[in-house]
Length: 343
Image 1 (spheres, rainbow, N blue to C red):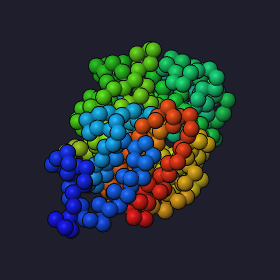
Image 2 (image 1 turned 135 degrees about the horizontal axis):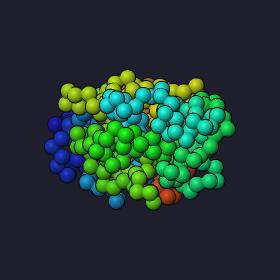
Image 3 (image 1 turned 120 degrees about the horizontal axis):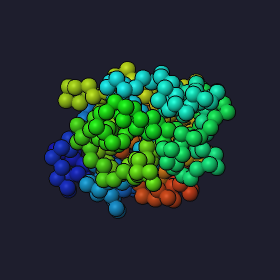
Image 4 (image 1 turned 135 degrees about the vertical axis):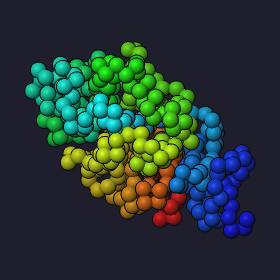
């Protein structure tokens, strides 16, 4: 055992699923854990090839306690789109106006395709200008106007995701799938088969689930989702989503080379969610770590996917409201991942 050590924390809580790791990797994981904990980290998990290598909880963090993902919720929409494609309910290149009929009368909105909407390059202001609150209802979102051509400008915010929610809702009703709303569909098609149980998922005043934010799940469940994506959407030998549509989740638009369909892909030229988020400031350095896909939320909630290493990393933290107010603060994705990977 002197060459192969179990994670200190996971050994204490007796998780039989935790795999032994070499001492040098244990040292790196401990360094990353210490960095995260010193910056309000409460949950930290490393999974490779579907096996948990390291798991740690501090403060309010608990193995069975879900935590708010904030904007980390957004990436569920891109994968849900791939499930809809497999079910024949959606095409990524179809016009949104085919379902959202009110878009046809608008010069700009009539040209928006689903891929434009989820790439956040539809021409619609992601934040809705001053017309809405933080997260609009589905009905409010579809009234958002546009005065720009599709693909010309990246605009981050909740509005496109709520529009997507309404588009999905109408498709489910028309197809008579039996699902009441997008979350019911996501749960039936993906979350239940993967054994993911959200602790909660916020809904708006219209009763519809918030797709840009609102999910709260455990670190292990977030890691399961990430591993499923890394596995190409295959679970127990069965493809649960369309593989081409899933790969499209990681294809960038011309307007933002660092954003796919609801996933961040740090690389030079990436446009982040905002000047205080810290997500884009290290894009060049992060690109040196190899392929990296990321779901990111306020308070520095993170789900990292590293395809070259077949590794999933979850980091959850306290202080989401503080994160919204202060921005990235003292958190650095590059420092954290460099410590973990020994880069």
